[in-house]
Length: 223
Length: 252
Image 1 (cartoon, rainbow over the protein chains, first blue to last red):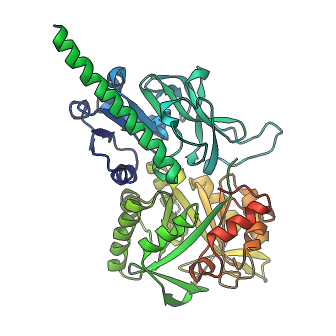
Image 2: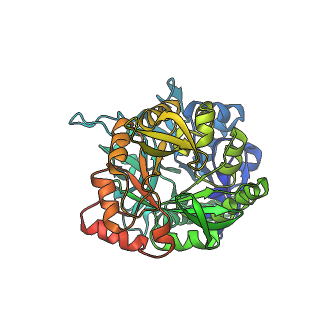
Image 3: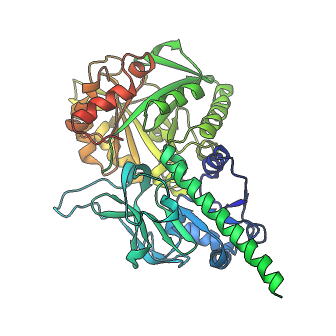
């Protein structure tokens, strides 16, 4: 079962409908005691980083998500991905979940040759697969994904970059570290490509859950 | 590379799709969900639904339409028309719309742009501007209420103001070109695109594939919207996109 983290920021309906189209059972909750029963979580979100972290802290989800991700998969989407990082400079410098090293910064709006460019980065952009062997990219060809964002992640560990887009420089599009994954674009709005990527995440969640059950059982036999 | 977007627009009245020529003379033409899925299969990058219902029943029906579309469609869509309050914005976004567009209500109450942007982020607040050339003043004048009421706003100034207030995108409709099928209003599109830092959608006047090329190359638009020519199959989204690809435009 997939849990969607509802902390009051964003459009849960589109995401839940996308899971429905993939015939994936899910539930929506803001309660750590309920969410911990999920095999894997999705952290969606649109809006401001500071408000989102405020709500996560208020609902005791900050601590919970970090603990959850020690054993089970977590996927952040759009703002949800940005929250995975150490901090964001949106508004005033705000601490994030600290699950992936790096800082969320704003597009400068001025290219290297001094020309102005549009912010937000909005629309369909092509992806480059940096870590094609990632389970999230399994069986996928680099395609178009739908982005809407004014801030992006400045990664501290290059190894956490799975796929990137080019928008006046390299923009992390898919990131991952151990059980924690993030998509800067909206897989639920990115046509068949987005659906395939979501499906890969669901598959990864299932494999992890099977493995946990197996370990539990063998643990029991052992004791 | 970021692709230029092709956006079919569906005018919806009391839950049914219609399209007017210069905002009058409506022809009934279909089910919004079916048409949305059709355009999606044709390669549309995004959709815009414009609610032109006059009644509150019609508006409630629109929320249902939005919910049904969001359940099926896996590309983004914008909903506009008759949005008066932050509550209206919340209802539509929660029903599954990705963006909402404000037109008359933004002119009447500019704070609504800011309230919406503060609540859901500026990426989901589109400011729709209906503009008409005024030969007497030599400016493009902003109109509201489906093109029926002139305002004292100059379109370029209003676009800049709307972005400063928090609009994340401008949907610019030329009332002079709308329904004429003789091409987009390139001069104004370019001026606004250069005046603001957010994406600009050109709208009004598309008649053939090359009009889209002009909107992107000369008008500097980030996206282009059309209704009738797609709706009555005078051309298709797929045709327009393959033409643009041949011309070297970045297209999905």
